[in-house]
Length: 354
Image (cartoon, rainbow, N blue to C red; front, side, top):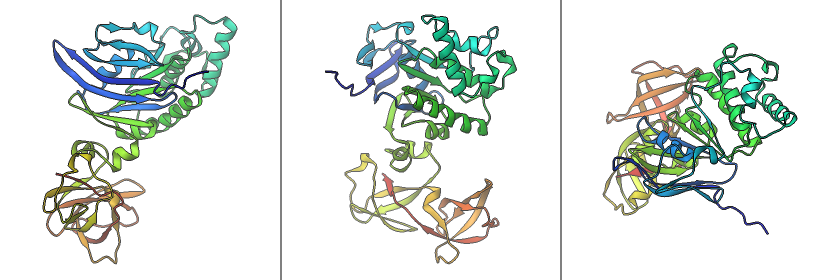
């Protein structure tokens, strides 16, 4: 009788360091088979080092990494990268310039017969929509097409895990979005477990089932995109993921907070401030989607800046006490700088920090 694998990929208290200086410390998270994870953070936070450690290119100073119930890394033991059955997709595509598209995809299929290799390669080229370009050379492809070929090549040997290192960073914004959707669909269709590294939250939201926010060598939060956005565990996560502002507030009870915009009951709260008391000063996270433009509202704010985004404006609004908030407003509401507009709050997740 088979035993179900609780966590297909698991990192437990992982430490990575050079010359006794920890680059990453206490990193723990897990993925189930077929899930897509994303490591999100600013440059220099350690996310690429963590990806390299999972791939076997960095040694651990502490902790353990297991894949499919097998230990692949721990202190003084690192299973060689070529023995991990892990695929990698890089930001620079790394295609072989002297090989055609289909020859690139076939490159890692040494153990298969010619017929099996052809069948697998043609299937993947069909999935990425490049069957008609199987005979062309990489330099004849666009950047997006080259990245799709790199993905197909990495998926061809059916790896246990796929690692994607800033895979869309060389592409323009529109192509990133469409290609991200295609890549996610293909990974789900092939039931491939994957981890992506990026500094772009939109890529993370589009691709991942679970997102880990890293900063200064620590994993601050590992959660769904929805929870990362609406229930950030601390002020850094709140500021890094999505847009928003911190308004001054004061706790009037253990569940209610008073701000210049009114009194709100906390429906969700950062776990770090369970000991908050009435009278404590706090910061209240207000997202642009918490502010609704309503002409009839008695509550008004002055437009101090605006950014046109096609379907909507992002307005920077100054309240009567000079605090600023952001609001996303349909673009047919075209308001001028210094104009006062009516607003109301619609907050489902009141998140406060000391």
